[in-house]
Length: 273
Length: 336
Image 1 (tube, each protein chain N blue to C red):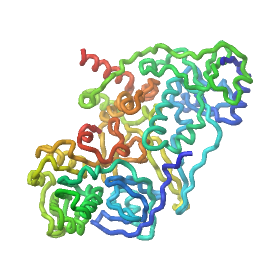
Image 2 (image 1 turned 30 degrees about the vertical axis):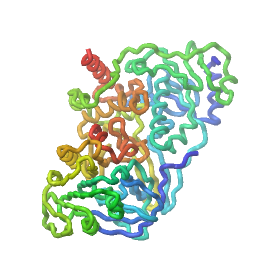
Image 3 (image 1 turned 180 degrees about the vertical axis):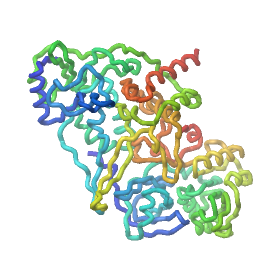
Image 4 (image 1 turned 90 degrees about the horizontal axis):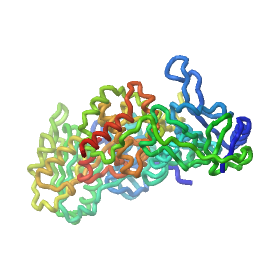
C-alpha cells in the first residue's frame, strides 16, 4: 500500500515575527531538509490548504513568510507560538544552487518574491567565498511593504543591496529601509541598466516576483546581453495537491508543482498560460 | 471464452457478482434530464440487466463510479486525522471501449504523473473491473475512430444484447461466475469501425501560432464557462481541495476534494488576486490543447477519446469534434 500523500503532519509554531502590516514570518518546528526554492502545502483543518514557499530553514526548523491575503492565511495570522500548522511536502524543483558557485549572482525580487530566495541569500551570506560577487535588487510597492529589513541591513554588509519602491506612501518613507542599502524610488526594471556586469559570462540571475515583474526584469537582463540559460525564475500558481494530480498549475504540458516552481528562463519563456 | 445468457441467467450472474462487487451501468434516471419531465442516461448501481441502457450514450461518463465528484480524504477532530474508509467491495462498471481508454488516461495522470500514485484514486481503482459494452453502431456525436479509441482489449468481459440474449466474451472471469451461468457460445466483441463524423486530428500543433488563432475569440464569444463539457468528460481529472467543518463543532470536519473545471471562473485564482486565462476563449484553447496536444507530449497518447459527450452537453452547441477538425484542417492547409 502506498503512503497517503494527502495526510499532513503537525508542525509547532516556534516563533512569529511581523514583517509588514500583512506579512508575518513563522518559524516552524520541522525536521525536513528542503532544497532552496521548494514549497510546502500548508493547511488549517476546517479552513483549507495552500502552497507556501519556504523562506528559510535550518537545523530542526523551517521558516515561511506568509502574507495575509486569503482564507487560510487569515486563519494562520491568528495563530501564535505553541500553536500548530499542518504541512505536506516539500514539493517541487528548487534552484540549482551549485551552478551559482564561483559566479556573479544577481537576485532580483518583487514584493514577497524575496521570501523564496531568502534562504539562498542567507546561504551565500554564510559562505561568501562560494560566489565571485552578489547583487540583490529588490522592489516593493511602498516603504511599508519592505520585508526583512534587518536581513537587508545584514546582507548589505557583504553584498550590494538595492531596494526600490514603486511609490512613497503616507505611512512611510525611504527611511524605513536600512541606510546600508541603496534606496530608490521606481520600478525594479529601472535598476538593471545600472548594474555593473564586469564579466557577462559569469552572471547568473534569479528573478522572483509577480508574473509581469519577472517578464520585464528578464527582458532587461536579456537587453544587457545575458543568455536566457543564465536566468532562473520561480512561478506562483494555484495548486491543490503539489503532487501533479489536481491540474490547477498545469501550463502546456508542464506541471509547475513538478517541473517548477523554479524554471530556467529557456523553459519559462515558452510557457503560455 | 464466449457465453450467451438469457435475461434470467444474466440476472443470476449479476446477483452473484453483487455479493462481492458493486455493479454500475448506464441506466435511465427518471426525471433527471435537463428539461422538465426529461430522463437522463447516467450511472448507478444495477441489480437487473434489463435496467442497462444499451441503445444510447450515457450523458455522464463512468468516471464518477470510481473517482467520486466529491470525495472525503480525511476527517479531523482537533489535532487528530482519520483517513476516510472505502468498502472493500470490487467495482464492476459497464462502459464503452472509449470509456475504458479514458480510464487509462486517468491512470496516467493519477497514478503515473508525479513521484507517487494518488492514494485515494488508487484505493478505488485497484478494485475496478470493466465490462465493455459493444458498440454495434456509432452514436451521433462519437468520433472515437478518429481518436483511435474505438476498440479495447482491456476488459474482464464484453456484453451486447442481441435477439433476446446477452452475449459475452469473457477474458478474465470474475469468481468463475460468467462460466457458471452462461452457455458456451462463439462471441467476439463488436466495435465501430467508422463514425458519422470523421475528424482530422492535428499532428503537431505549434502553441505560439495556436495561441493567436482567431478561432478562440469566436469560441470565447459563445462559451459561457459553465464547465459542463469537463464534468461529462471521461478523461477530465482536475479537482480542488475543500475543507468543511461541522457547524455544531467547528473543531471537527473533513477535507474533501471536488471535481474542478478549467473553464470555470476561479480555476487559477490565487490569494492576492492574480489569475490566468481570464477569457473564455483562452480557457477553450487551454482545454483543447490539453486534450489533443499537451497530454500526448507528456504521456504519448491523446487525452481526448472522442466520446463526444462534451458536444452533447454544451448549452451553446460548441463542438469539440468540430474544433479539433478545424485545427487539423488548418494545419494541413498551412503545410500544403
